[in-house]
Amino acid sequence: MLPHPFICSRSRMAVSLVLVFSSIALLGSLLMLYAGFGPLVALVDAGSFMGLLAVCGMLSWFFFAYIRVWQAQIVLTLLVQGICLGISYTIVSLAELESADRFGWMIPLRLLFGLSCWMLWMQSYRIRLIKGEYREKEKEESLPAKTLPPLPALSREDGRISVKDGLRIHLVPLDELLYIQASGDYVTLFTATRQYVKEQTMKYFDTHLPPSIFVRIHRSTIVNSHHILRVELFGKESYCVKLKNGTSLRASNSGYKLLRERLGL
Image (tube, rainbow, N blue to C red; front, side, top):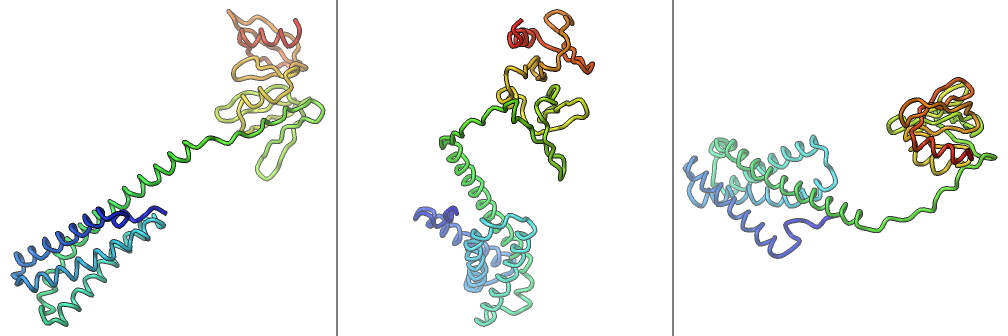
């Protein structure tokens, strides 16, 4: 967990205390100006309310660090304002400084001032959390990545490609696989009887399928050379690969050269 932003150093603690006393002085001045309170009454009233609000604000860091649900934050905000008003009223009443009517007249002013200070306090917490999480992410990204051992290539004898389809898992033998085509973030595996969609990259199959059998004839197509019937010229630097089941696949110039090399032509 990140350290509390206002008590993690002496300088921050000093700034926090200055802000709290400044808010008490400002609220006290407003009570004197708009309610006609004397200096002592205004000081006790503002000091009790803002002092309690500051304590709750300090403790709320531990709440906001774990709970990011905005509904819960709103409930906490309203609850804190009500508690601070209630305790502040109890203090000034026991000291016989204000009557209930005089205190009630200034509740809107206290709430407006208290909510403003609270929102500024919480926004500073939110910025602190975002910066802290960003720094932690930068540290994680700067760490050297763990190198994983390369996956073994699929062999013709025991090679089968697993495809999950809902609650079922299909095992597609390599001998039955006619060709593979890219479909965005997925690939489609074509057999003589059906198609299978798998969340995998073309690069994976290009590097893990048996290179003597499967050839990448296009950036979006890998074909099983055992199912090729013939190759025809389709256009300038473009070729058409005909499969035994009648399917036509487009091959690029580089793919055609690679196919000829793999077939020994």
